[in-house]
Length: 414
Image (cartoon, rainbow, N blue to C red; front, side, top):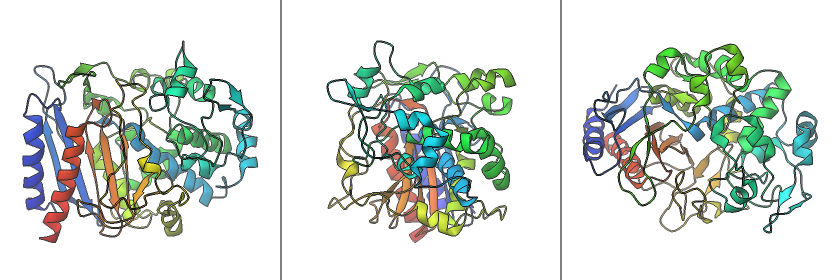
Protein backbone atom coordinates (compact mmCIF):
# COMPACT_ATOMS: atom_id res chain seq x y z
CA UNK A 1 0.00 0.00 0.00
CA UNK A 2 1.28 3.47 -0.88
CA UNK A 3 2.79 5.36 2.07
CA UNK A 4 1.01 8.71 1.79
CA UNK A 5 3.73 10.58 3.66
CA UNK A 6 6.38 9.34 1.21
CA UNK A 7 4.10 9.86 -1.79
CA UNK A 8 3.34 13.49 -0.86
CA UNK A 9 6.96 14.39 -0.05
CA UNK A 10 8.23 12.89 -3.30
CA UNK A 11 5.52 14.53 -5.42
CA UNK A 12 6.41 17.90 -3.94
CA UNK A 13 10.12 17.33 -4.47
CA UNK A 14 9.84 16.18 -8.10
CA UNK A 15 7.32 18.90 -9.00
CA UNK A 16 9.71 21.57 -7.69
CA UNK A 17 12.18 20.53 -10.39
CA UNK A 18 9.95 19.63 -13.34
CA UNK A 19 7.88 22.83 -12.96
CA UNK A 20 11.01 24.99 -12.97
CA UNK A 21 11.72 26.04 -16.55
CA UNK A 22 15.40 26.59 -15.73
CA UNK A 23 15.99 23.06 -14.37
CA UNK A 24 16.21 21.44 -17.80
CA UNK A 25 14.33 18.37 -16.51
CA UNK A 26 10.90 18.20 -18.19
CA UNK A 27 9.70 15.01 -16.52
CA UNK A 28 10.58 12.29 -14.00
CA UNK A 29 9.12 9.07 -12.64
CA UNK A 30 10.05 7.72 -9.21
CA UNK A 31 8.91 4.34 -7.86
CA UNK A 32 9.84 2.61 -4.60
CA UNK A 33 8.68 -0.77 -3.32
CA UNK A 34 8.89 -2.83 -0.16
CA UNK A 35 9.76 -6.51 0.17
CA UNK A 36 6.22 -7.58 -0.73
CA UNK A 37 6.60 -5.80 -4.08
CA UNK A 38 4.00 -3.23 -2.99
CA UNK A 39 4.57 0.37 -3.96
CA UNK A 40 5.68 2.64 -1.12
CA UNK A 41 5.49 5.54 -3.58
CA UNK A 42 4.86 5.79 -7.34
CA UNK A 43 5.12 9.33 -8.60
CA UNK A 44 5.16 10.80 -12.13
CA UNK A 45 5.97 14.48 -12.47
CA UNK A 46 6.17 16.94 -15.34
CA UNK A 47 5.86 16.16 -19.04
CA UNK A 48 7.08 13.44 -21.41
CA UNK A 49 8.89 16.05 -23.48
CA UNK A 50 10.10 19.65 -23.33
CA UNK A 51 8.39 20.89 -26.50
CA UNK A 52 5.01 22.63 -26.35
CA UNK A 53 1.96 20.41 -26.06
CA UNK A 54 3.68 17.25 -24.83
CA UNK A 55 1.52 14.95 -22.66
CA UNK A 56 2.06 14.66 -18.91
CA UNK A 57 4.46 12.08 -17.55
CA UNK A 58 2.58 9.08 -16.13
CA UNK A 59 3.31 5.66 -14.64
CA UNK A 60 2.83 4.02 -18.06
CA UNK A 61 5.68 6.06 -19.55
CA UNK A 62 8.38 3.89 -21.16
CA UNK A 63 12.04 4.84 -20.83
CA UNK A 64 15.16 3.63 -22.57
CA UNK A 65 16.87 2.27 -19.46
CA UNK A 66 20.37 2.04 -20.97
CA UNK A 67 22.81 0.49 -18.45
CA UNK A 68 19.99 -0.55 -16.12
CA UNK A 69 19.83 -3.38 -18.70
CA UNK A 70 23.08 -4.77 -17.26
CA UNK A 71 21.28 -6.23 -14.25
CA UNK A 72 18.88 -8.13 -16.54
CA UNK A 73 21.69 -9.50 -18.72
CA UNK A 74 23.63 -10.59 -15.65
CA UNK A 75 20.60 -12.33 -14.15
CA UNK A 76 20.23 -14.16 -17.48
CA UNK A 77 23.89 -15.24 -17.36
CA UNK A 78 23.53 -16.38 -13.75
CA UNK A 79 20.49 -18.47 -14.70
CA UNK A 80 22.69 -20.13 -17.34
CA UNK A 81 25.38 -20.69 -14.69
CA UNK A 82 22.78 -22.35 -12.44
CA UNK A 83 21.80 -24.62 -15.35
CA UNK A 84 25.43 -25.62 -15.95
CA UNK A 85 25.47 -23.96 -19.39
CA UNK A 86 28.05 -21.33 -18.38
CA UNK A 87 30.89 -21.16 -15.86
CA UNK A 88 31.98 -17.98 -14.13
CA UNK A 89 35.70 -18.72 -14.04
CA UNK A 90 36.42 -20.85 -17.11
CA UNK A 91 38.30 -18.74 -19.65
CA UNK A 92 38.65 -21.71 -21.99
CA UNK A 93 34.86 -21.96 -22.28
CA UNK A 94 34.71 -18.22 -23.01
CA UNK A 95 37.41 -18.52 -25.70
CA UNK A 96 35.76 -21.53 -27.29
CA UNK A 97 32.47 -19.63 -27.56
CA UNK A 98 34.11 -16.30 -28.42
CA UNK A 99 37.50 -16.77 -30.11
CA UNK A 100 37.52 -12.98 -30.57
CA UNK A 101 38.12 -12.66 -26.81
CA UNK A 102 41.15 -14.91 -26.98
CA UNK A 103 42.57 -12.79 -29.80
CA UNK A 104 41.74 -9.31 -28.43
CA UNK A 105 44.71 -7.06 -27.71
CA UNK A 106 45.38 -4.27 -25.21
CA UNK A 107 45.55 -0.62 -26.28
CA UNK A 108 48.70 1.15 -25.08
CA UNK A 109 48.89 4.85 -24.19
CA UNK A 110 50.64 5.56 -27.50
CA UNK A 111 47.76 4.07 -29.52
CA UNK A 112 49.53 0.81 -30.41
CA UNK A 113 48.33 -2.66 -29.39
CA UNK A 114 50.04 -5.34 -27.33
CA UNK A 115 49.29 -8.95 -26.42
CA UNK A 116 47.25 -9.30 -23.23
CA UNK A 117 48.44 -10.90 -20.03
CA UNK A 118 45.77 -12.70 -18.04
CA UNK A 119 42.59 -14.35 -19.22
CA UNK A 120 39.04 -13.13 -19.78
CA UNK A 121 36.36 -14.98 -17.80
CA UNK A 122 32.61 -14.50 -17.52
CA UNK A 123 33.17 -13.18 -13.98
CA UNK A 124 35.64 -10.63 -15.35
CA UNK A 125 33.09 -9.49 -17.93
CA UNK A 126 30.37 -9.09 -15.27
CA UNK A 127 32.64 -7.20 -12.85
CA UNK A 128 34.28 -4.81 -15.37
CA UNK A 129 37.72 -6.24 -14.65
CA UNK A 130 38.19 -7.88 -18.07
CA UNK A 131 39.94 -4.78 -19.43
CA UNK A 132 37.20 -3.36 -21.69
CA UNK A 133 36.06 0.28 -21.51
CA UNK A 134 33.48 2.66 -22.99
CA UNK A 135 34.49 5.20 -25.63
CA UNK A 136 32.48 7.98 -23.92
CA UNK A 137 34.37 7.50 -20.62
CA UNK A 138 37.84 6.70 -22.00
CA UNK A 139 39.69 9.28 -24.15
CA UNK A 140 42.33 6.75 -25.21
CA UNK A 141 39.69 4.37 -26.58
CA UNK A 142 37.69 7.24 -28.12
CA UNK A 143 40.75 8.48 -30.01
CA UNK A 144 41.76 5.00 -31.13
CA UNK A 145 38.38 4.52 -32.81
CA UNK A 146 38.67 7.66 -34.93
CA UNK A 147 38.33 8.84 -37.68
CA UNK A 148 35.29 6.52 -37.81
CA UNK A 149 34.72 6.40 -34.06
CA UNK A 150 32.92 3.98 -31.79
CA UNK A 151 29.21 4.22 -30.92
CA UNK A 152 27.86 1.57 -28.55
CA UNK A 153 24.39 3.10 -28.88
CA UNK A 154 24.11 2.15 -32.54
CA UNK A 155 22.78 -1.35 -31.63
CA UNK A 156 25.34 -2.89 -33.98
CA UNK A 157 27.55 -5.71 -32.71
CA UNK A 158 30.36 -4.52 -35.01
CA UNK A 159 31.21 -1.72 -32.58
CA UNK A 160 31.58 -4.23 -29.74
CA UNK A 161 33.67 -6.63 -31.84
CA UNK A 162 36.04 -3.83 -32.93
CA UNK A 163 37.04 -2.59 -29.48
CA UNK A 164 40.40 -3.48 -27.94
CA UNK A 165 41.00 -3.79 -24.21
CA UNK A 166 42.36 -0.75 -22.36
CA UNK A 167 43.77 -2.76 -19.42
CA UNK A 168 45.17 -6.25 -19.04
CA UNK A 169 42.47 -8.61 -17.67
CA UNK A 170 42.23 -8.57 -13.88
CA UNK A 171 44.60 -5.63 -13.42
CA UNK A 172 42.08 -2.80 -13.06
CA UNK A 173 38.39 -1.94 -12.78
CA UNK A 174 36.98 0.08 -15.64
CA UNK A 175 33.37 0.43 -16.66
CA UNK A 176 32.78 -0.76 -20.20
CA UNK A 177 31.35 -3.24 -22.68
CA UNK A 178 32.02 -6.36 -20.59
CA UNK A 179 28.34 -7.15 -20.07
CA UNK A 180 27.65 -6.74 -23.79
CA UNK A 181 30.25 -9.49 -24.25
CA UNK A 182 28.67 -11.55 -21.44
CA UNK A 183 25.40 -11.43 -23.40
CA UNK A 184 27.22 -12.66 -26.52
CA UNK A 185 28.74 -15.52 -24.49
CA UNK A 186 25.23 -16.49 -23.33
CA UNK A 187 23.80 -16.32 -26.85
CA UNK A 188 26.53 -18.53 -28.30
CA UNK A 189 26.29 -21.05 -25.45
CA UNK A 190 22.50 -21.38 -25.69
CA UNK A 191 21.66 -20.55 -29.30
CA UNK A 192 19.09 -18.09 -27.92
CA UNK A 193 18.99 -14.31 -28.43
CA UNK A 194 19.64 -12.44 -25.19
CA UNK A 195 16.32 -10.60 -25.32
CA UNK A 196 14.48 -13.87 -26.03
CA UNK A 197 16.17 -15.47 -23.01
CA UNK A 198 15.28 -12.50 -20.78
CA UNK A 199 11.63 -12.55 -21.94
CA UNK A 200 11.21 -16.29 -21.40
CA UNK A 201 13.18 -16.75 -18.18
CA UNK A 202 12.77 -13.43 -16.36
CA UNK A 203 9.87 -11.36 -17.69
CA UNK A 204 7.30 -14.14 -18.22
CA UNK A 205 7.81 -15.72 -14.76
CA UNK A 206 7.60 -12.25 -13.19
CA UNK A 207 4.49 -11.38 -15.22
CA UNK A 208 6.10 -8.28 -16.77
CA UNK A 209 5.06 -7.20 -20.27
CA UNK A 210 6.78 -3.83 -20.62
CA UNK A 211 10.49 -4.54 -20.35
CA UNK A 212 11.92 -5.39 -23.75
CA UNK A 213 14.80 -4.72 -26.15
CA UNK A 214 12.17 -4.45 -28.89
CA UNK A 215 9.39 -2.25 -27.52
CA UNK A 216 5.86 -3.29 -28.46
CA UNK A 217 3.59 -0.87 -30.32
CA UNK A 218 1.93 -0.04 -27.00
CA UNK A 219 5.31 0.69 -25.37
CA UNK A 220 6.37 2.95 -28.27
CA UNK A 221 3.12 4.91 -27.86
CA UNK A 222 4.14 5.66 -24.26
CA UNK A 223 7.79 6.47 -24.98
CA UNK A 224 9.34 9.45 -23.20
CA UNK A 225 11.15 11.97 -25.39
CA UNK A 226 14.95 12.16 -25.27
CA UNK A 227 16.55 15.41 -24.13
CA UNK A 228 19.97 17.01 -24.38
CA UNK A 229 21.62 19.59 -22.20
CA UNK A 230 24.39 20.78 -24.51
CA UNK A 231 27.78 21.51 -22.91
CA UNK A 232 27.80 25.04 -21.50
CA UNK A 233 23.99 25.30 -21.41
CA UNK A 234 21.65 24.94 -18.43
CA UNK A 235 18.61 24.37 -20.62
CA UNK A 236 17.75 21.04 -22.18
CA UNK A 237 15.91 20.49 -25.44
CA UNK A 238 14.34 17.53 -27.17
CA UNK A 239 16.71 15.61 -29.42
CA UNK A 240 16.60 12.56 -31.68
CA UNK A 241 16.62 9.32 -29.74
CA UNK A 242 20.08 8.00 -28.97
CA UNK A 243 19.06 4.35 -29.21
CA UNK A 244 16.95 4.34 -32.35
CA UNK A 245 17.50 1.04 -34.16
CA UNK A 246 15.30 -1.17 -31.92
CA UNK A 247 12.55 1.47 -32.12
CA UNK A 248 12.65 1.39 -35.93
CA UNK A 249 12.85 -2.40 -36.34
CA UNK A 250 9.32 -3.63 -37.16
CA UNK A 251 9.71 -6.97 -38.93
CA UNK A 252 11.55 -10.10 -37.80
CA UNK A 253 14.01 -9.51 -40.64
CA UNK A 254 14.78 -5.98 -39.38
CA UNK A 255 15.04 -7.15 -35.78
CA UNK A 256 17.53 -9.84 -36.80
CA UNK A 257 20.08 -7.12 -37.57
CA UNK A 258 19.73 -5.35 -34.20
CA UNK A 259 22.29 -6.31 -31.56
CA UNK A 260 20.78 -7.54 -28.27
CA UNK A 261 22.87 -5.24 -26.08
CA UNK A 262 23.25 -6.64 -22.57
CA UNK A 263 24.94 -3.37 -21.70
CA UNK A 264 22.27 -0.90 -22.77
CA UNK A 265 19.52 -2.42 -24.92
CA UNK A 266 16.31 -2.47 -22.89
CA UNK A 267 13.26 -0.20 -22.64
CA UNK A 268 11.00 -0.38 -19.58
CA UNK A 269 8.31 1.06 -17.39
CA UNK A 270 9.90 1.87 -14.01
CA UNK A 271 6.87 0.35 -12.24
CA UNK A 272 7.81 -2.99 -13.82
CA UNK A 273 11.59 -2.70 -13.46
CA UNK A 274 11.20 -2.44 -9.68
CA UNK A 275 9.45 -5.83 -9.71
CA UNK A 276 12.73 -7.33 -10.93
CA UNK A 277 14.35 -5.69 -7.91
CA UNK A 278 11.58 -7.15 -5.72
CA UNK A 279 12.72 -10.64 -6.74
CA UNK A 280 16.26 -9.77 -5.57
CA UNK A 281 14.86 -8.50 -2.24
CA UNK A 282 13.29 -11.95 -1.84
CA UNK A 283 16.33 -14.11 -2.64
CA UNK A 284 15.37 -14.61 -6.28
CA UNK A 285 11.65 -15.18 -5.81
CA UNK A 286 8.90 -12.85 -7.02
CA UNK A 287 6.65 -11.77 -4.15
CA UNK A 288 3.90 -11.18 -6.73
CA UNK A 289 3.91 -14.38 -8.83
CA UNK A 290 5.84 -16.74 -6.54
CA UNK A 291 8.23 -17.61 -9.39
CA UNK A 292 11.78 -18.43 -8.32
CA UNK A 293 13.96 -16.99 -11.09
CA UNK A 294 17.31 -17.31 -9.28
CA UNK A 295 18.46 -19.44 -6.35
CA UNK A 296 19.12 -17.71 -3.03
CA UNK A 297 22.81 -18.61 -3.18
CA UNK A 298 23.04 -17.03 -6.63
CA UNK A 299 21.56 -13.76 -5.38
CA UNK A 300 23.89 -13.90 -2.35
CA UNK A 301 26.85 -14.32 -4.73
CA UNK A 302 25.68 -11.39 -6.87
CA UNK A 303 25.67 -9.16 -3.76
CA UNK A 304 29.18 -10.22 -2.66
CA UNK A 305 31.99 -7.75 -3.28
CA UNK A 306 33.91 -9.24 -6.19
CA UNK A 307 36.76 -6.72 -6.17
CA UNK A 308 38.10 -6.30 -2.60
CA UNK A 309 41.52 -5.64 -4.18
CA UNK A 310 40.13 -2.38 -5.68
CA UNK A 311 38.55 -0.66 -2.63
CA UNK A 312 38.77 2.80 -4.24
CA UNK A 313 37.65 1.85 -7.76
CA UNK A 314 34.73 4.30 -7.46
CA UNK A 315 37.07 7.20 -6.67
CA UNK A 316 39.29 7.00 -9.74
CA UNK A 317 37.04 9.52 -11.53
CA UNK A 318 35.33 9.44 -14.90
CA UNK A 319 36.48 11.87 -17.60
CA UNK A 320 33.93 13.34 -19.99
CA UNK A 321 35.49 11.82 -23.12
CA UNK A 322 32.29 12.72 -25.01
CA UNK A 323 30.85 15.72 -23.11
CA UNK A 324 27.51 15.51 -24.95
CA UNK A 325 27.10 12.03 -23.42
CA UNK A 326 28.55 12.38 -19.94
CA UNK A 327 29.62 14.95 -17.39
CA UNK A 328 32.94 14.34 -15.64
CA UNK A 329 32.56 12.64 -12.25
CA UNK A 330 35.24 12.65 -9.54
CA UNK A 331 33.50 9.84 -7.65
CA UNK A 332 30.64 7.42 -8.27
CA UNK A 333 28.92 7.52 -4.85
CA UNK A 334 30.56 9.87 -2.35
CA UNK A 335 30.24 8.75 1.27
CA UNK A 336 31.46 10.38 4.46
CA UNK A 337 34.74 8.92 5.68
CA UNK A 338 35.45 7.33 2.26
CA UNK A 339 34.64 3.72 3.24
CA UNK A 340 35.78 0.99 0.83
CA UNK A 341 33.14 0.39 -1.82
CA UNK A 342 32.37 -2.83 -3.61
CA UNK A 343 31.23 -4.20 -6.93
CA UNK A 344 28.94 -7.21 -7.14
CA UNK A 345 27.93 -9.12 -10.24
CA UNK A 346 26.91 -6.15 -12.44
CA UNK A 347 26.32 -3.38 -9.88
CA UNK A 348 28.02 -1.18 -7.32
CA UNK A 349 27.63 -2.01 -3.63
CA UNK A 350 27.66 0.66 -0.93
CA UNK A 351 28.99 -1.54 1.85
CA UNK A 352 28.28 0.97 4.64
CA UNK A 353 24.84 2.57 5.26
CA UNK A 354 24.24 5.52 2.95
CA UNK A 355 23.29 9.13 3.70
CA UNK A 356 19.69 8.57 2.53
CA UNK A 357 19.01 5.87 5.11
CA UNK A 358 19.82 2.85 2.94
CA UNK A 359 21.26 -0.18 4.74
CA UNK A 360 24.54 -2.04 4.40
CA UNK A 361 25.49 -3.72 1.12
CA UNK A 362 22.89 -1.90 -0.92
CA UNK A 363 23.19 -2.47 -4.66
CA UNK A 364 22.69 0.38 -7.12
CA UNK A 365 23.43 1.34 -10.66
CA UNK A 366 22.38 3.74 -13.38
CA UNK A 367 21.61 4.40 -17.05
CA UNK A 368 23.34 7.06 -19.13
CA UNK A 369 20.13 9.07 -19.74
CA UNK A 370 20.04 9.69 -15.96
CA UNK A 371 18.13 6.75 -14.53
CA UNK A 372 19.16 5.30 -11.14
CA UNK A 373 17.99 2.21 -9.21
CA UNK A 374 18.84 0.83 -5.78
CA UNK A 375 18.11 -2.45 -4.00
CA UNK A 376 18.51 -2.64 -0.22
CA UNK A 377 18.18 -6.22 0.98
CA UNK A 378 18.96 -5.30 4.58
CA UNK A 379 15.94 -2.99 4.91
CA UNK A 380 13.75 -4.62 2.25
CA UNK A 381 13.42 -1.53 0.04
CA UNK A 382 14.16 -0.92 -3.65
CA UNK A 383 13.37 1.78 -6.15
CA UNK A 384 14.14 3.70 -9.31
CA UNK A 385 14.15 7.25 -10.62
CA UNK A 386 13.88 7.64 -14.39
CA UNK A 387 14.51 10.53 -16.75
CA UNK A 388 15.59 10.87 -20.39
CA UNK A 389 18.14 13.67 -20.15
CA UNK A 390 21.68 13.69 -21.54
CA UNK A 391 24.51 13.95 -20.58
CA UNK A 392 24.96 11.48 -17.71
CA UNK A 393 25.58 12.80 -14.21
CA UNK A 394 22.82 15.41 -14.27
CA UNK A 395 22.96 17.07 -10.87
CA UNK A 396 19.24 17.89 -10.92
CA UNK A 397 18.18 14.27 -11.41
CA UNK A 398 20.78 12.95 -9.00
CA UNK A 399 19.64 15.44 -6.37
CA UNK A 400 16.07 14.20 -6.76
CA UNK A 401 17.21 10.57 -6.53
CA UNK A 402 18.86 11.30 -3.19
CA UNK A 403 15.95 13.39 -1.90
CA UNK A 404 13.28 10.89 -2.92
CA UNK A 405 15.20 7.86 -1.64
CA UNK A 406 15.66 9.68 1.69
CA UNK A 407 11.93 10.52 1.79
CA UNK A 408 11.12 6.81 1.45
CA UNK A 409 13.27 5.82 4.42
CA UNK A 410 12.07 8.77 6.53
CA UNK A 411 8.44 7.83 5.92
CA UNK A 412 9.08 4.17 6.75
CA UNK A 413 10.89 5.05 9.97
CA UNK A 414 8.09 7.40 10.98
